[in-house]
Length: 336
View 1: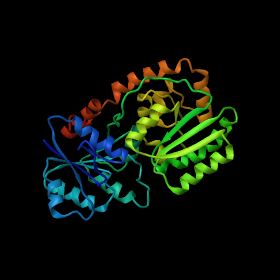
View 2: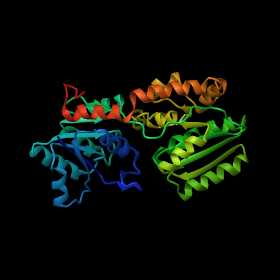
View 3: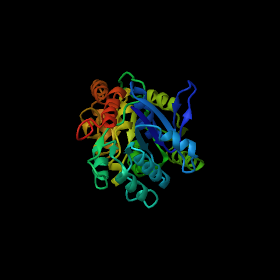
View 4: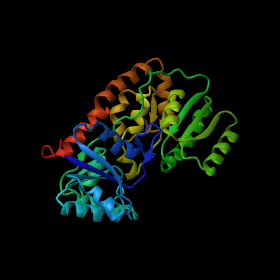
């Protein structure tokens, strides 16, 4: 079986010659799964809206076309061409853009066109189901990073790490008064690992100056190497969130990566985080989560180790790829 994974083009060549991407969802939803799909001939094709005929023909030289991060109307044309040639069309969607004025129409059209829709979470599948011809299938995000030894032994200053796309900084901004309250009881250092802009750097300087050593905030440009290094260096990963349809469909990938690296997480509630509350605090506020960790400091490493065993059994790349294999083969009424 030949499979074309068609995406919008944010692909790069890594130093070891493999294909990578700065976009996390492309790594989780395309690049990592296909590396595990032995026995299936596949290619990744970056098809831009102005793609040439040769590139479009290459993308359609397959039995199955998987569209990922496909928000351009041009992809609808390509999907229709694929179906006309007899290809099965799979649409993978992991962000709830159905009501977005820029992307909503394209997402609704691609969902309706697809023979099968794949989502990252049950909440995303519920949102997509209103537009799909068959119930969407859930294939979760795999882990990506190296495993680390579990530990929680903070010093006088608690080292916090936030990492993610700049679009999620609004959740962090909303949580800053809560962190300021924590800083009155103990010094905090907060590293932001993301795309660094001058306004963000200026905000870090402003916060650090205001709190005079009680809450030091700095920003570092994101890279995979930096992510693994910062996870190893921090005491706790924080994942703030707020009530928003865009947030409730998100996967647990940041939770999974942090725990796999051996670090506890203080997060605010999201549906995908519920299973992890038995090992690390998922609380209405970050301050409640950080207080819980201090109260259970002696138990935290063992709890993180238990979480790592759960993650290995559910989010290992080979396990996730098997879900993709069943979807591609259309194995059973639900594709799994």
